[in-house]
Length: 357
Image 1 (cartoon, rainbow, N blue to C red):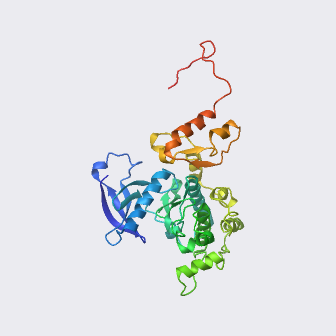
Image 2: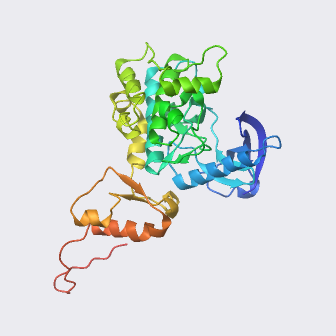
Image 3: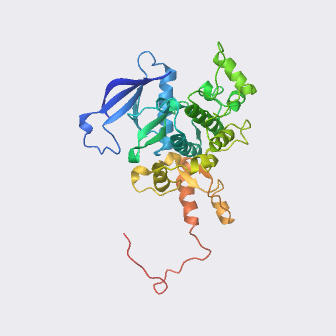
C-alpha cells in the first residue's frame, strides 16, 4: 500500500508517530477497511537500530494474531521500519485532562477491560498498560471509545524475556520479583491507570533523586503500596483493591473485574454495542471478521472432543491452538455439539427436505 507521511503527532522511546494519508490510487477502497487518514509508527534514522525494528515487527505480528476488536487499535499493514495503524484526533487518555469525572472513568475502564479480556484469551499479555497507550476515538452520541494501543512489548503468557517489561510506574510486584509474564501484570496496571485518571497524579511515585531500578526494587519488596484516591466512590476503591492484591493468584482477572459494580453498571451505549456486536464466540458476519487461522479460537476445554464425549463443558474458558490443528479440532468440536447417539435415517419417507440459501 502506498501512503504519504505528514506531520509528527507523537513520539516514544523506540519510534516516532506521524500523520499519514492514503495514496490517491487507493481512493476506491472502502473506508471501513482502509481509512483515508492513518497514523504511521516509524523508526527514523536516529532510531533505526535492530531493537526498534524488531519491536515494530513484533507489534505487527501480535496485532495480526489478535485480529479485529472494537477496543483495540486496528493495524493496516507494515513496511520496513513502518507500521500503519488507526488514527484518532482525540489523542490518548493522558491528554483527556488531569482529572476525569468518575462517570467517564467507569466507561473507559470498562472499554480497557474488554480489550484485556480479549488479549488474555488469545494467550497474550500487553505488558505496558498506561494512559499514554489508551487512545480515545469518537463514539456514538458524541461520546468517546477507549482503545488499547502500542503492543510492542506484548508477550505470550508465561514467557520470560529478560525480566519485567513495561513502565516502572505501572509495574506489578510479581513482574519485578518473578519476571514470568502473566495477565495479572495488566490487571495491576489497570488499577494504576484508574487511580491516576481519578486523582490527576500517579498511584506510585518515586522519591526525590531515586532512579527507576531502586524504585522497582521497592515495589517488589512491598515498600511502595498504591492507595485509592479519596474522591473515588466506595465502588471505585473496592475495584482498585481487587486490582492491587499483592498475590497475583488472589488478584481478580480482567474478566472478573468486568462484572464489578464499578464498571458493570456504567451507562454506556458503546458498551452495549460491543455486547451485541462482538461478544466472544459470536459468528462473523463477513469474511473480513475472521481473526485468522493462526489464532483460531475454540470455545470449550483444552481436551476438546474427549470432554464433550464425557458430557463435561467449559463455556467460559478459551483455548488458543495453532493452525496445524485448528481446522480438525475446531470444526470437530463444534459439530459434536450437535451430534446424537444414533445415526440419522436418510430415507425419503423419514425426512422432509427444504431448500435453503
